[in-house]
Image (cartoon, rainbow, N blue to C red; front, side, top):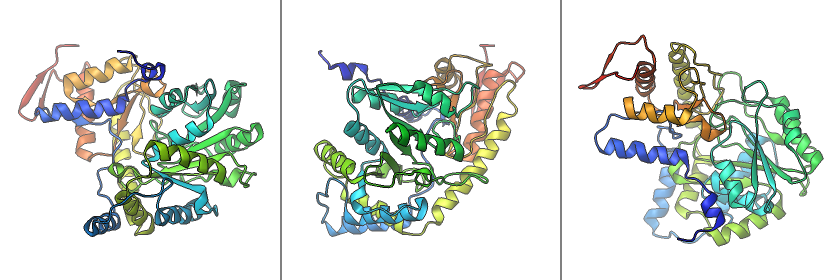
Length: 405
């Protein structure tokens, strides 16, 4: 079979593959604990469900404009003013089938073959592949100290003649790390100075813990004209626990939004009418669910941190937001893919290899499930790896005997 160069260069999404594998094992009756997922367990807001049900019951579910329905765009305008302190118009907004599509379309509107996209490591698994889909090149920037936040100097060192775009995701998937105000300010001003596009992937921006607060990149921008190259991407998937609704948006200058809309119009037309009305209702409705989810996640994170302390040699930078942690397990196994496969095979715990996020030796451990899943999952992992643990472990009625240490 003859496939295109792009098709041959794109790898399967490791997170989606993990979900598929875990689901298949569960269907076979296997006691899988999924600590690799990126999906809150709370229910979607009632306002969203009522709005979508109302439209469905009317039977008038039709095509929508390629850039989104008016009520959703107006909701995004209001949301941007409230949470970003920025006044925009509906012409600055494009709604998409998820934040992922918004990022992808922004890249397609900006990048040419051989252009380079820079992003700090660890990074979301899709950034390199999305760049490839544009014929562009993803360039990861690692911190010299092994941490999760490089310096501006580290980024400057990677910028060359082909650099066109920078992406920041804070708080970050997979680490839960929230970049400092100083770092975000430096990157915003650097991108303006060098005329680089900057995508702020803010899909988790209100899921922050402790004293950490959402940061608006607009606060540090000097160019607020329609020539600005700042792109804000957000959506309802994470904060509103509406992952299956697949609604996100981009906020950018009008000319770029027009170009992105033209591209999206030929890709998928407009997002689903049902789901857009649901998203608009979530943004305009009661917001207590976001805070409730945030508090639940913070409590789950605290439990996870305490449990990980029982692992000798595991290093963890405590997550400051999201629902992910990114511990360094290299003291047990440097090959994160090998470790993830081992844990799924031996104790039926699903985690995501750090290699897929640009940092080998780490694994992404999610805490968006139940406390029971977190505690039991980490107990299984500790049993599988700790030579001082008992030789037998019961999972329900099944007895496991460790024969690999």
